Image 1 (tube, rainbow, N blue to C red):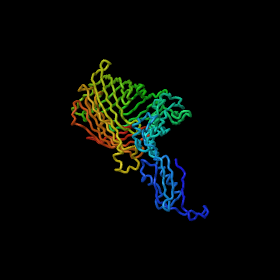
Image 2: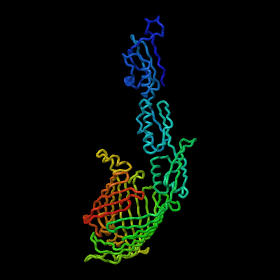
Image 3: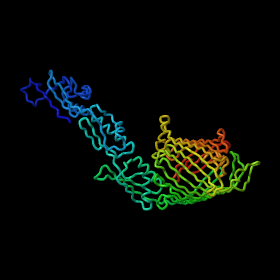
Image 4: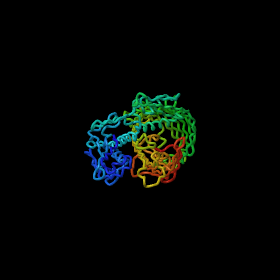
Length: 578
């Protein structure tokens, strides 16, 4: 604390002793300035902030300002001044009382970070004189650390200084209760599981915003509002109140597609993404065109370490006048009929980055009506009519950043497919493949090299994406419908569908996704790969091209134009290739 200023002017106007005290006091010159009471803080450092200097004149306002400046240096608990006559003028002596030397800094209430982690933000060190200003900045940095990591409700609730020991109490408010209201169809547990927030969790606004965005992205609600309430009797807790306004989740959709080879196709679907309010998906639909299909699926896609996801369905496809290629060379046209039935179940491991999914699949294929064949054509397709019964196990390691607004990180998938005659199939083989997908923002790399005018933001960055896949099998000759197949809009974009087939395969897809507006991106891509019975790694096929992506209410509109070895291909559809 700061005391009042004492002016001791004992003998300044002896010659004017007969005059009234109310007469004007002459200016008094400062002869010297000093400091007493400082043991650790240098006098020069203290006086550096004082405007009172030898040779200046005594001013009550200036000295008061000097006392405040010295006190505001933060090292002192008490600052006073003494002014004494000296050599025809006055000596100004500031008196200070230093804060104690820091012996320890102790934190309590911190569960998110250890004391060592918090001390990394603290500049005040044991052995130094305690400084109020420095330590206030230390506490600000600690709160910034919490807030930067999303814990915006955390605060310093108390600081006690006992001698040289400093005790800091942190308050990390926990969620006492999550109240969900407004839902009449959607089950409350369906909403709660998307929030990933349990009673007793420390509130994190970054994670909450992400999970709230995922909840809104389900398409179940027109609006989602959030409010917070701090109980009067407990400032260490917070209640979260989530109010939703539901919307219709059943819809009828129009499907449109175009491929250079398959031509224009279209159809209708009926779907409900929140069947019975339990987050289950149901869809039934058809596409007509040169390639026609009819399907129905029923699924519960959500899964975590405690909840199983599952799906089942059926699809019938017919494709008249389809081209059959052998190592990129057209052999003939044929008609294809396939009926597929499947059912699967999966779950995440305790480490939820990992998951598994097991699928039983029955596929019956029919190939006939060979026509428009080239002279000397090779038919290694139609002999493979039959039924294939498989058990498939998919393992996934997903290390994408779930809090990023764009794909960031990597995903690794490994699939094992065992064909089993004992289950009613005609074939027996083991087929296996592994795949990695990578996504990386290039914003930091190009920062400072180009003026992006705000187009490439942290939420919508310049993005590099890559997919690498390799596969093989225990049999050199696989059934036609089980072969690895490359060519078309989802593998090698510069080639016709099923241009390259075999029991071995490798594929690489590389894309540079360049935003040019908030809802529009241009994509430059390069694809490389091959599929064959005996893999020759030096014999590869590649293509390159440009694409456009437009964000629409129906999803990401995708247009790709690819240049292959012999011809160009154009594709139109929805969604990214990977």
